[in-house]
Length: 364
Ligand SMILES: Nc1ncnc2c1ncn2[C@@H]1O[C@H](COP(=O)(O)OP(=O)(O)O)[C@@H](O)[C@H]1O
Ligand SMILES: [Mg+2]
Image 1: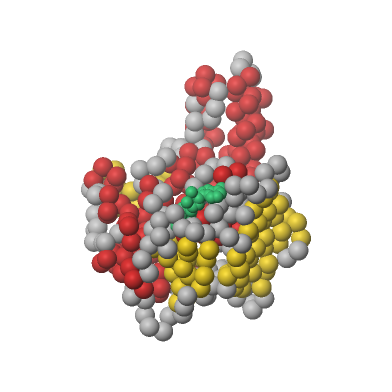
Image 2: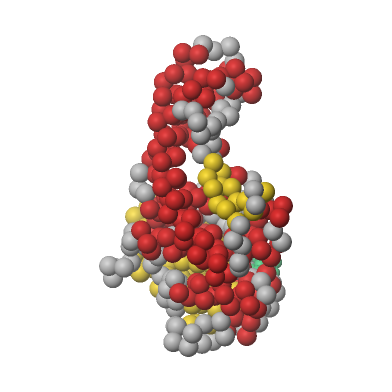
């Protein structure tokens, strides 16, 4: 689902611009501070209604401007296009429009434009909090399983209710029952979805990793968030006293995690920083391949920021080859165009964009 057209106004230092990117590789180059990451950030905003650099959107809005807007035209496999747009003003929340209609759900935006981000920040996936790995996993499940989102929303709602009752203190066990029934049913459903997805992801991940870096003893496994020998209802029952003391629910799908191990030890304690980056790349690229395998008629768009400063030439080439074979749209940045120019086959469509002081100009 490549972006055929992107219009950006009021984002960071970027001058208002409309680009017609290549459906395959888009190389964005320019000096440090010129606005390369800001351009990727604009696309990220379009697909996910949030930045990848700050939790708040305010800093994304250009100094002196009241709002920022990003529009895009997304080519669907059917030949139709969807026009999507997001505006975020200083006062209000964001406004999302899809094909002229205002929509409230970010999920709809994400569905129209599935994005994968590979940047220095995402390399912390292995060492970061479980939440990041859960988000990674759920990105995949969300895009292949339409029932995932409603189950996830049910889980959040019932969890919130149970936790707020727990915090009230001195409650009867029976008061929790209706919420627990809902919580257990949602958690089990989510667990099934995640488990199925991971089972399919694993071989794809292993194959891709082997093309990037030989790490035969690396294993990827899934922790569902509660004891694998016991039903969740029993665990909630057994942990009721402790949950009441803590004021929140300790076990459940909200605590799931992915575990990466080398020879039985935590991979972050064993692998070099460079190896960890390659593992993260393999995880991210595997999701793109798997999306194709599921045949959900969706390709994701890859945003790859600052790769040359993160990987050596050999691994950079291997990574570019994997991305290229995936045949999806890529936006990739570097300071020097030469660092990434020769990483692709001659006949793959490549567009180049030079960024200077916030001006983006297509050069090739
Ligand atoms: N809200 C903003 N308004 C205007 N300029 C900004 C804003 N936020 C950041 N900048 C500036 O935008 C420039 C572009 O940054 P960035 O996109 O990270 O550059 P690059 O990725 O090319 O190194 C930086 O010089 C930064 O100071
Ligand atoms: Mg940058």
